[in-house]
Amino acid sequence: MAFPKRTEASILGKIRQYTSKNSNITQKDMDHVNTLVEAYGKDWERIGQETDVSPRRAQRIWAQHQQRQKVTQAWTKEELETLRNCIRDGIGMAEASRIIGTKMSYACNAKMQSLKRAGLNNAFQKSRTLWNDDDVARLVHLVSTSKGGDIDWTAIGKELGRTAKSCHLRYTKLHQKHYNAKADHSEAVSREVQKQYEQHQRVDWTNVAQQLGLSERECLEANQFNGGKARWIYDPDTFSWDTADRMAQFIKDNYPKPVPVNYTAVSNYMWTDKSDCVKMTSLLRGEVTWTAEALALVVRLRDSGMKFEDIAHQLSPTVSASRVTATYHKQKNPHVYQPLLDTDRQQIKDIMDTRAHYMDFADLRALVIQSMPNANKSALYTFVDSHGAALPAYKERLKNSNVEHIASQIMSGTKQSVLAKQMGIPSLMLTNLMRSRTFSMHSRTWTQEETDKLIEVARASPGPFNWKSISEEVGTKDPKQCRTRYFNVGHKY
Image (tube, rainbow, N blue to C red; front, side):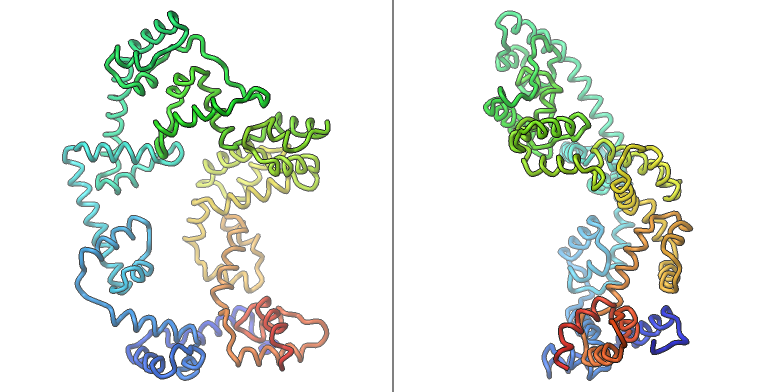
């Protein structure tokens, strides 16, 4: 090692200090680099040597000079609208500055804060005004397109320019009003449907709508009479695409995405059991829930000699044979790999999502493993670690900690697992942190000086190459970069 009395963390710190010297870009720096660009073009290697900075930093100085040439003081309507869109989409000030192109990042930050304060005041004032038909229609649309069962009233309030409480109360009143109106004519529709079915063994929905003065869709959604409805259980021998296409077309015409499907109406239109309609829709999309029964059926049919294409057809009209093949082999070789069932995955998510904000990850991991005694340990550990690293509660813990100090401890030799346990987060998060820091710390471009240093150190190294030690002596590249560079250019020296 070139500096035996220095720790690895100390050397890396000095490298970062050296490579980031003159970090405050002055107008003189920008003018100098711009003059060199006019003289040499965008030859960043040569410009970096002339200015005693790295090629990447020279390029950054020139980009900042170009941006300052375009900077204006006054904000136009188009720029303000673009900035509002950045706030809505969660884009930071630096990226907003690049998108707008005529404002520096500090100006974008100041204007963002001003717009946010004004937005809160406007939302408070607007929450006191009456709701018009357009606002109500937008509210219903935003709620209907919400993902999952949780409705983000704060996001909807920002979209409408009102407070979250105002939106929630208004939608509650609308929902109650709709429910009462539906209940008022539900009984009348059900009586008329029952009457027609008992007389003709079928229902003419056009006639029902005319008799009651409602639309056909309102009648289909309101009817509660289910007498005589057939079951629709998937059977590959009797399955008819005509019937399936008829249901799919009804859903497409009446409930286009992102409008949620009303399966009561679908059930009444097809005159089949509601739960069967829901299951058949999933099968038509190729969705197969790998329950223990489904896995056992696949193994039994394959062991009896049936082809994978025929087994797939036994499960669903659209599931692929390759998916069934992969599932079969995983089931037959549980010691190699056994995937978690969809129900197990959901159970793990429920346990972790509801407890992450008050439990350390090590305790939560032990609780999950104790709750799933029959699951494959390898698959279970992998899923728990990856899902834990994605939980907002643990991301917040890492964000609030001293990341620089943590990275320094790891580079000094402290085990990631020990630090992760102390912080109460998954060690996978620290692994990802160090990978990102290593990538950002080491430039991908090689200077002539770095290449010469690499060749000298590598050829002076006795025995097999120790790329970690070589990278430490080079100082600005990681082991993988050193290895790749040497085998690409080493034969030329």
